[in-house]
Length: 100
Image (tube, rainbow, N blue to C red; front, top):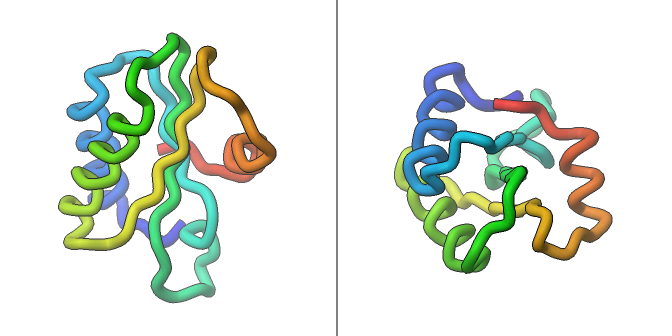
């Protein structure tokens, strides 16, 4: 995974601060898992055990905060919660992603 331990901790801390949720899994998926690749954005899957309100706003806030932590790197956030529709990308992200 192309994140340092310090970056991974900082990302996780930023996500927890924005979401204020204790029951949350954060996974990195996509191109950041390929150690041979260069550049690229950071793809995150946030898996909530409880329904969430205002998912678009929450995703935007998490993306902005994590982007600041990573000095402007583009961050895509995918949310999974019982009240949200799931698509094939959710399955891929869950199965291939690495927990932070």
